[in-house]
Image 1 (cartoon, rainbow, N blue to C red):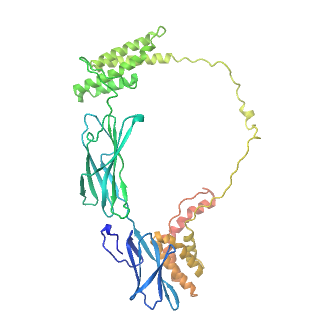
Image 2 (tube, rainbow, N blue to C red):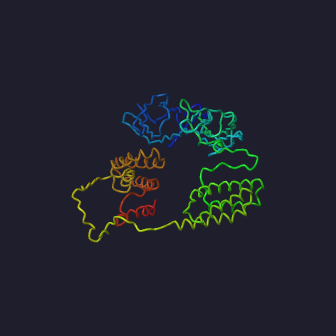
Image 3 (spheres, rainbow, N blue to C red):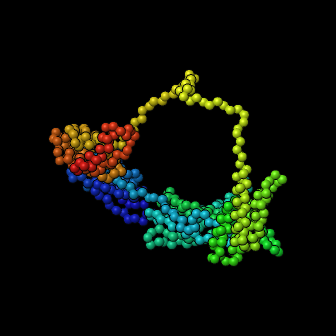
Length: 474
């Protein structure tokens, strides 16, 4: 077996029942017969055959490792054709690269004035080495229907081989040099290819997002006195304002004076819209309590603006109390007027409707579940019952597709071949039958739960079968 050149693996010789080849390897089959042979060929489980040519004392043929299969040698002489035991050809696939984004991950936000370079670190591993690697970057700018997308690829600046295998790839994203502005987004992922030819395998990492916060939507004006924040996009409730004030007072010891004053001013900015929203409700018919609530909000906002949240808190509670009292008093319940339908007499009208115009629709069908254990049951009967040579051959033939992917069934297949040969000669080989049964039980998979009634003797019998099989001697 000669592996593909890009793998860097040396040529090797495989013997025995299990033959392992790299995907795409060049194979040279070599068979040597003990006696005179007139022709030879290889029979594969998929139905293909490969003729062997005479080369000195050996019979040889070439091929390429593609799909896994069972291989059987057929030798012809003057007496007929002799079939050898099956060999299992397993393929070691060349898997695509595995690319992992170490940093950054998820979503990262930046302020427009603080666009620091972003360090990117990626780990890439492959069975036989990494070929090319790059960053696939997409920049989204604009809003709504005017959004624009720009795609580009960036190389990795650093490429270091890791002791445990694979590569460590590094790069730096300069957001300012890439032209990102407020509100723009950059999302990227890493791509890598292996060295397989002619079609390399490809792998990619998860996607990371870099977002430039758009602060232009909330402008601020410079005044000689106090700076007032713009009106927020939503109104905080009076209860939320109280919660924020109490949290500010609890965090007072660990906050700097400037930060404390800024947070107090922000709460005052929230109190203002809350008051303005209640102010239009004032009218000639509104009670005095609602006016008192607005006055309390005025006092709370005043103390918050001058960085005195402890003095604003009582007014906030007073405003909340007055608002709740007005809200409860405004709930007036009146009896519904107009048409009142008569009550339905359920006991008299139940099940008396007419179904003449309602047609019935019945769909019947029978679904047969896929039986993936038919070959194993046939083999089990042949191994434990009074089987004939035809039964043993049928059991062996049914095990061939399963043995391609399960190496444990290869020995079971050989045991049934020997049992079929012994029965064909007119003798019942008890040791062959026992060997087939002994090898079959450990290789048989457990059946999963299927649809059916969960009661009765049939259900209990199905539940008891696995226990009996596990308790049976092997």
